[in-house]
Length: 358
Image 1: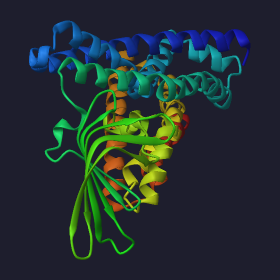
Image 2: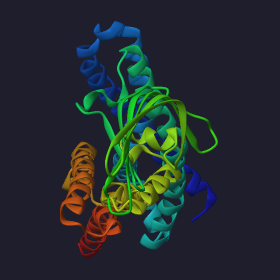
Image 3: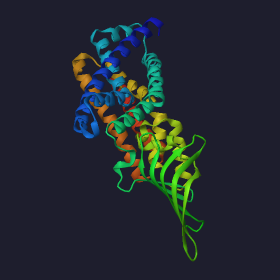
Image 4: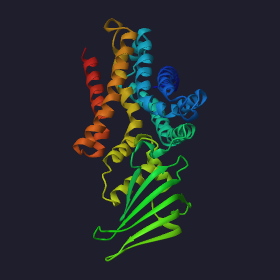
């Protein structure tokens, strides 16, 4: 395919996809804002702060909606070309299905890179900033939703943080220490905990209860130090869903869970989805391609756009469904993350074969 034709198709698809994405973002932002209205007035939460919160969540929405927008945008662009008989002219001039698929693959590669960059470098910090903004505005805490606070296992230590502040400092932390036989050795209660940036937590104003064989001792310490891989960034997993975490933080937290013999399925599925999800753009473009060869008598552009919306919704639902099924049935994480894309890729090839045989 000539560079001129490549640029022409790219311009049509990029423009249509951008319009669809903007429309979706406006719709979702509106509903998110309506949802935030319930919290206005709580702890001084204002209308302005709600608007800022919704704006900060938009990068995560872009990441989620991009494959669907690519599907609908590509469908619209190809339907418009078919309506104007431009696809027919291209095929008459020698454009093969394989050549068109390669061209769409090159255009889709741009979307893959864009989705990866947004999902890894833009959405996670924006989502964290959004949650910190709202927690600060409403004067809430990260662990406020849990009646007994946050519980974390680290080797032979079990930490219970009653309050985890938005700035990742601890309030009213309790540390349970066990020996190799899992017998309780001591309980340390700290009024405050701060991270020193060098792999250690500094627990301040500590009251430690030591359990001896024949007695119990209580001592009061100004501070104790606790070295752990549980950095404030790792504890930040509480503020965002695993799907919105960057790859490095997911990997670190998964290793921590494994080392402590805890279930990491949810985070492993999220890790594999981080790898696979950007390539959903290519799957969506492959799914849109057969519709470029369907004649107008089989339905106009509006019918194809409606079909694209339904397919996009189905893909979005399948992604969530297989993630939950993977956790419930203990499927291999890569299987739970990859299956929706494989189903839609198979559907794309099936549709293409059906169109070619007509």
